[in-house]
Amino acid sequence: MKIILKPNNIIELIELNDFQSFSLETSDSSIDDDQVVAGFGPDAKVAGDGEFWISADRVRLLAGHHADAEWHRNFTAMLSKVRPYGWASDDLTQIRVHLNKP
Image (cartoon, rainbow, N blue to C red):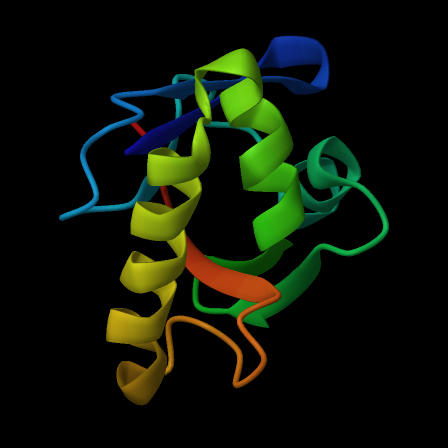
């Protein structure tokens, strides 16, 4: 699963059914932390070292009508799987992502 952050804070979720990986990418090498946080809204926070905490519900919203009950189960299972490694909050409401820039 990939989140693509485009200019003007346009966000797109692609590879929706790939629950083995999760990344945040941008083609804008000049994007800064404040722009990333602004793109994801008030629940987003800078985690440091090019990483951010974003709302799991925001990801669910990005999935839109593609997110059926099975998708939600798989997404929650993915969060549970990465939680012990610090990539999801204890309550599974936040997911930590690394921003990949060109």
